[in-house]
Image (spheres, rainbow, N blue to C red):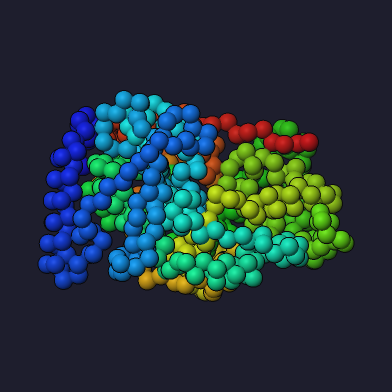
Length: 492
C-alpha cells in the first residue's frame, strides 16, 4: 500500500464523489454476487460535530454521533447512536486520522482521550485523533452491568461473574438491545460508516489488547480503509483467550519469582516467596480463610478462584506485579486486607461495559473452547480452570451471535503494521504475536523488554511516530528497544 503521508487533504466535493462512486461499486458487486450488503449500499451520511470538552483534555474537541441500524439486515429497525469525538490537528495537513480501538472488550475510547492526546502530541500537530466508542460501550449505548449489585459478601468474594447479577443484567439489557448484534463485525461496519461520514481517507489504527481483535476484523472487512496499524499485545482471532489465561498467568508468576530472587531487596525481604505463595493457596483450598467485610457482621469465606483472578490481573503490568511478593507475605502472616481491597476495587468501573464483554466473548470465544483442552491448559497453574468455568457459566445467559463465514480465520494483510509485545505481560503471551503476524506481509515486531500489557515507552513512541509519518515499515525493519528497568519491589 503506497504511503500517503505527503498527500494533501481531499476537497469536500472530491470526497463526496468518492463516497458515491464507492457506494455504487459496492452495490454493483453485491448484486453480481447475489448477496447485497444493505448497509454498504446506503447513501453516504454526514455527521455534525459541535465544540465539546473532553475530560482531562485542554485542547478543543468536537463531538457528535452517527445513527446506524442495530441490525444491518433490518435497516428500518432499532437504531443506535454511535458516539464520536475528534481532537482536531493543530494544523491539519493529512486526512488520515489516528483511530483508537480500545480493549476489554468494553472500554470507552472517548473516556480515554486525555492519555492518548498526550501520547500522540507530536503526531496530532498535523493529524486528527478520532475517537469512536464501540457500539455497546461509552457514548454508544453502553451495555453496563453492575456485577457488584449483590451485596452478599459470600458471593462477591467467590465469583468474578456472579450468576444472579449476570442473568439480571441480560434480562434488563435485552429489553432495549438485540445482544447478538454487538460483535466486532458490526463495530467494523460502524467505523467504516463514521470514516465516510467524516470524509476521512485511510485510517491509522491504534489498537491494544482486545482492541486488536477489532483491528483485525476491520482490516479484513475494509483493507483499503487502513493506512497503518499499531498492534499492541495482540489477541488472535482464532484463540479462545480464556483458555490460555491460566498458563499465561503462571508463566508471568514464574517470571516474577525469578525477578524477585535476582533482586537483592526482594530476595532479602521475601526469601521464601514461592513457599509462601503455595501456603497461601493451600489455606484458600482448605476453606480456612475468613475475613471481615465492612458493613457486614461476622466473617466471610475468601475463595481461591476470586483471589487467583485478582492476582492474574495484577500480573499484567510490572508495576502492579512488583507489589505481589509483599502482598503474599502479608496474607501468609494472616493479613488478607490488601487482596480483599484490591478485589473490591476492581468490581465496579463506570466506564467499562461488562455487557459488551459478554456479548463479544460469549459469541467469539467461549463457544470455541473444547472441553478436552481445558484440563491440559489449566493443570499445574495457580488459576486452574476457574476463569474458564466462570465465563462459561456466565455465557449460558447470553445470546450467541451468528458469526460471518471464516470470521475466526487468521487475517492476511499488506497494511504496514507495527507489532509490540511486552516480555513481562501476564495477559497476552509472546507467542500470540508471531501467530497473528504470520498473515501480515508488511509487519515488524518489537519485544518491549521489561514491559507489560500494552505498556508504552519513549522508544516505542518513536517507532510508532516513524510508522505513521512514513506510512511504511521499511525503516523499522530490525528495530529494537533497550530494556526498560523493572520497577522496585515493594518490601514494606
